[in-house]
Image (cartoon, rainbow, N blue to C red):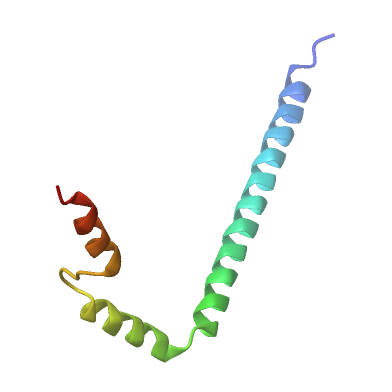
Length: 77
């Protein structure tokens, strides 16, 4: 008994079912990531980023800290 078109139809339904599951999981993952990003953005205080960037600007260049001085001391011959 030949059942070519029926078999092809079943295979197409399985393939589209897998694709729809894949699209659903992808959208759930992307939605969760976007929701987390919004939550983090809302919980940060607006002044924190300005203070952090000011500290970063103040710390530019060479600074002889305690661990640098310790290194210099240990390299003396």
